[in-house]
Amino acid sequence: MKISSDHWIPERPPYMLKPLKPIPAVATVSCLIDEENSCWIPETVNAFFDSKTAEYIMRIQISRHGGDFVRWPHTKHGLYTVRSAYNLVRAEGFFVERSRRGRGTSSAVANDEKHWKNIWKINAPGKMKIHLWRFAQDCLPSGVQMQRRQIPTSDACVFCGREEDVAHAMLLCQFAMEVWRLVKRKYMIQLQRHDLMSTKYWLFEFLANATELEATVLAVGCWYIWEARNDARNNRGHPDPTRTSVKILAYIDMIIQQCFKAKPSNRRETDVAPRWSPPPPGVVLVNSDVALFADCRQMAMGAVFRDSEGKCLAAASLPLQGFTSPEMGEALALRDAVMIARDKGFKNVIFVSDCLSLIQRLNSPAPDRSEVGSVVKDIKTLVAGFFSANFRHVKRCLNEVAHILAKTCNLASLGFISFSVPECIRKTLCIDVC
Ligand SMILES: [Zn+2]
Image (cartoon, rainbow, N blue to C red; front, side):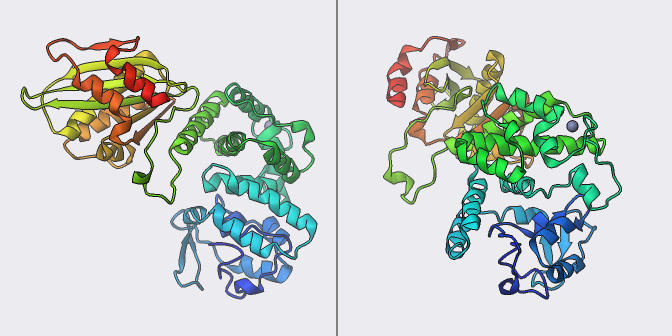
């Protein structure tokens, strides 16, 4: 449900909405709602709309039943989920819409618009971008904000007792500072906290100077710091800066790995020869494969572990027990690869296989009751001990190196796990990196 383009206020169709401040086209109604308390945020509503419109908005009842559900009595659907609204965030739509509507606005507003766009461009989930947007608009329920809303609560920071505004919660509090210090060990971002006069301009400035990765780090960091603060406020466990920073780093790794996937293009995949791409720094890429020897009814696995420079950290070629379906073979091969990665102490790993069905099972949160279900479960349990572990499908030609190791396995031996490059894959490894 978009604030500016959807008909969500019965008395005010979108063309009659004249917000007092520009609202990004993708901003959703959820930005105006305090989800925790299932109520409108009067400051935010009043900041954007004239008093009459604000009154109409506040009249709309937000249901407390069923968690995220909000009832919209005057829309076709009648039902609306806050969560689904997050999914509506589409940066592209925002660019098109704003560039069209941006014409004719004052230069200050147009300039702001340019900066707001930087939020929606961030490589992060919509909910994290909306969170940053609310941070910049100073409409997150901080202690200070709650007092302004006359909600009977303390404005003291739950961690240090100082007055809690959004800047304090996210950047200046000792808890936040410690989390950022830990995050900065891996991602050197400059928060320039001494420049902090207004959260909006601070964020504009930060994003204007940040690399794509730094913007992602900020969005993810702010999200988890805010979550930790909410947990502390609601007495849900003892937030710990280290744990929060680990969550942040793991989430960033996941985003990096997704961006590292080939960007979808208009051309069909078959039009372009796929190329091997290295994992991001600090991440190990593991190719695994199975070879089935039908004549002697045996199987073997092969796996190669490479770093961001394409350097081979380990290679394995091991016979597998029994003779099963190809998918089961792939699952057993990948499970062995996971165990080797664990034993070698690799903490951030991308496992790739050319078996699409297996990768889909591994990426599905649903319990798997298929033949390979038990192995899939084993793998999921094993990777829970990693900082980050992702499963990706690659075309067979990009998994060649693992396939060679599997098919050249000496079935009569115990196989090998080698830390030097086995001769049989030397050439293929070189082809991959050039
Ligand atoms: Zn504090």
